[in-house]
Amino acid sequence: MTTTIAIIQMDIVYGDPKANREQVIPRIEEAAYNGGEIILLPELWTTGYNLSRFDEIAETLNGPTHEMMAELAQKHGVTIAGSIAENDNGEFYNTLVAYNKKGERLLNYRKAHLFRLMEEEKFLQSGHQKGNFILDDSLVAGVICYDIRFPEWIRTHMLNGARGLFVVAEWPKPRVEHWRNLLISRAIENQCFVIACNRIGSDPNNEFGGHSIVIDPWGNIVAEAGDDAEVLICDVEFSRVEAIREQIPIFQDRRPDLYE
Ligand SMILES: O=C(O)CCC(=O)C(=O)O
Image: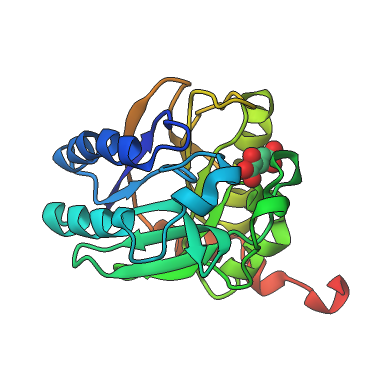
């Protein structure tokens, strides 16, 4: 069974959730019209890294962006995921959510590794829970940007048989080769699909690299965007994961007794 992925690679209007919600609607329509079943938006796609204004622009999990994602997911019969600035009683998180075609929230993952180079640790709390969730019949996981530099964190999500890793990011252009190589490595070492959305454009501090990408469990690139705005569409077959894990049974051959 194939699943059609649509990655919305876009610029983000700095600190303006309303403008970002408005610009995303036609892109979600385009993604759904082109058969996208799972639609992925970037990290902090409503606010960008306007962290010092999160007290004004971050939302509770019932906020207008969540309502919009749930409604559009229902309307188009798709799953929509992306990370949003969360305000939980005055504490702020970078939170990846996914809504399914019934408008139900499947995932609520708070970024675990905060990125000091963008001063996240000064403004945000880090999450403490894994990002595993069930997507249709497949166990998958979702993480955020800097999290991919921690192979042990990604492995933790894969030890229970997860077949796919969804990544959302605002990954800067000067390190776009790190982005590509880290994602390819995470796919090969975990024998899973990696489906990763990065933003383009710039904010007052950074230029972002695009190159949203889908990688199969053998490490081959299935689809990759350039550095312009794009809705990147491709098919994945999550069931391919098991054949590769049988061929080279790394999960059976692990030696956790040596790793502590
Ligand atoms: O690790 C990197 O180079 C980029 C990470 C990042 O931009 C982020 O976590 O927001």
